[in-house]
Image (cartoon, rainbow, N blue to C red):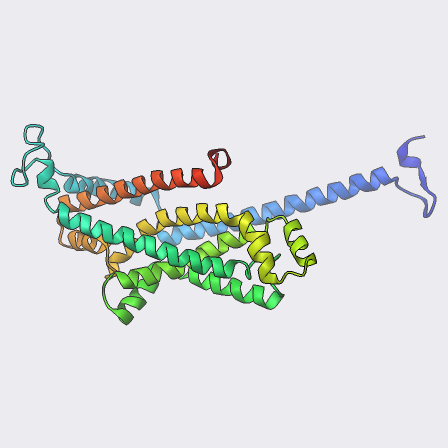
Length: 305
């Protein structure tokens, strides 16, 4: 006798469990297809709206491409193989291109210091907020909700907006940049840290709780040792990001090499633009290589693969 004709002893003749399972699976499949089609249509509508609002049209891109090429040609230095290693007074030499190198290095050091100090402050802020903002560690729902919203505010407001506010409050200089990047870093790192916390092993915490430990004891001895390597890795990654951010917020007077870059762009000192951009790229590359080595020491190369 086939499964289609089997009777249910409790409800009389009817479809077998296999038939009910297959029918339910088909319904779920159809429901998933409808949702996929709906979300796909919404995505395409949003994409079309974004293209229309931003005027991201192929014709406009093609028309603007030559202008990009012209600007890149203008900012590139005219180097001469014959005078490549001549002094700062000789056109076509590297020294002539980087005639302002002492000033650039001083500003670059200021930028790196801004990024380092703001990363330190942001890491401390994110560390203090992340445990109360973790669903599995928060003392109660209200604490979890409040800290989540605070971190969302910190990372949702762009660093440039914070920098403008602090430039108005404390004046032009690196202090405004440090405060702006620190707040944004605290929100971003707090989010990343809390996601790490939500994947911890709860057995050490249960043991500490059974021994009479407080919530702070559970965090200090049961959670922190598990998450510290990942926290360090995220903090180093944020340091790389903050170097780039420190270069940008200088455009609003928050110090660093970005302030000089804004100046040379405004006054069309073309060769100095390329010199500064190349210096920033080289610095970020060096920091990336250095931080990668530090991360390997903390969590191992095999875990970063």
